[in-house]
Image (cartoon, rainbow, N blue to C red; front, side, top):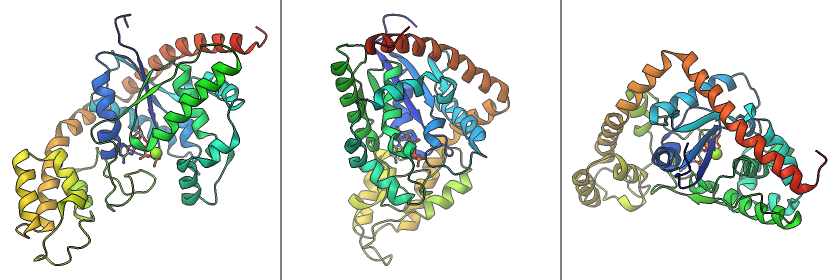
Length: 331
Ligand code: ATP
Ligand code: MG
């Protein structure tokens, strides 16, 4: 890494399943684009996964699969630090310090917390409440100035920025750096239900690594314009999630054709979905081939994660030393 880099990037994803189109379009595309000009850290946030998963049976496999997805998508371990959150325990120490400048009300008011409470009423734990504090610790530990994430994470980034101000003010320091969120052109991808954000935990997602057949089956399940009941009804592409994804995966001519024909019932939803599945599979085919190649050598993937751990720890140790000094803890 050289000093000519424009800044430092941090982002993470929960190893709660394989990466999906929402992760790819909302975040991973920027992970890849930013690694040319920034010093990047991409973290598999296994501690965050513990807030909602009830069993850790698949955790190690999920960590490995996420690394596969990222590497196959184009994250280059020569350029970026790819690592596992729990491998750098300094993050939990910083989490404790940040919790001291976090008013409880701020956490209970966050829309993401309220939503998780609705989704998991039986499992509202302290870790879930503190999720944004741990996420702030992730970013601040590495003094990242840029955080590529989907729009669902905007409140958490704002929280991290406020935490920096509170911490730096309380301890009269400038050791922590205020991060900026960086969104893609598709900051929110809807799930196959056409309603909620595509999420692993809602099982409304399409995995990047799915087979062409699985992908097609998922696309065929997608909810379209609910007003269009019969084939002869005109549809409204502006409110159809299938059309939104055509804009990503299909050619400009195809998008224009659907835009016109759907409105006058010239094309039916089945035909429209068939074309989407075909284009999506064509787009993902090189990714899937690369993923299979990388998966042939699992030890290499773990080596990459262990190298990432060592590189991340160096930065983390430095920040923690500065933070302890700023707080006034004994050395
Ligand atoms: P979970 O349901 O376990 O929370 P998830 O599907 O929401 O999983 P995360 O690991 O929480 O995925 O998110 C990883 C990254 O992908 C984050 O930057 C997040 O903002 C982004 N992301 C997730 N879902 C979407 C989506 N539907 N559209 C755009 N970006 C998304
Ligand atoms: Mg999520």
